Every structure is written in C-alpha cells, then in structure tokens.
Amino acid sequence: MVSVNEEAAERAFAGTDNELRYHFNLPNTLQADDLLAVTFDANNLDTNGADPRYGVEVYMNGVLVQPEIVIRDDQLNTAIT
Image (cartoon, rainbow, N blue to C red; front, side, top):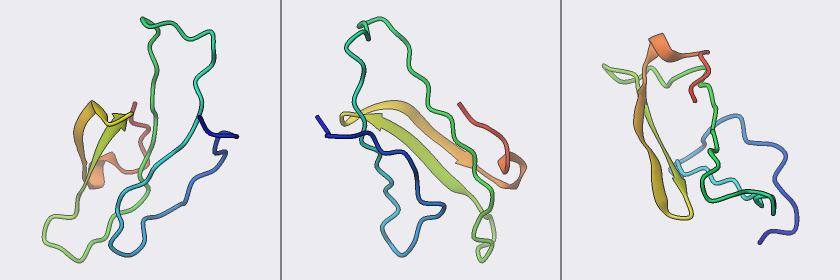
C-alpha cells in the first residue's frame, strides 16, 4: 500500500532507465471481475534511427496485462487504451 496515489507523470523518459512506474491504491469497492483501463498517448519519438518506434507493455503487480504495443509516427497524439 502506498500512502498517497501519484497525481502526475514525467513527460519524457530520460537516460537509459526506460521503465516508468506508477504507484496507486485500488478502492475497497473494487471487485475481482471489475475491469480497469490504462490510457496513454505518445507525442514524439526519437527520430535518430531508421525506423523510429517505441514499445509499451503494461504490467500490474508484475503480471503482463497488455502485451507490447509498438508506437510509430502514425500513432502519435492518439489515445491508446
């Protein structure tokens, strides 16, 4: 349990640590069959490579809940859920 939910996020990854973690508490009213959603959007990519892209996976408590989504230029500034 964390004392408070995180209310903001970094706007970019920096350096070699590409893992972004959020800490939050689930409400006591949450049931085992309730669905949760994670929505994010990317607004730019490092364009130094031949095929600019970034892969995103979502884990909850160490369990993969969203396999990798590869973001390329066509997916920028689009909400992904």
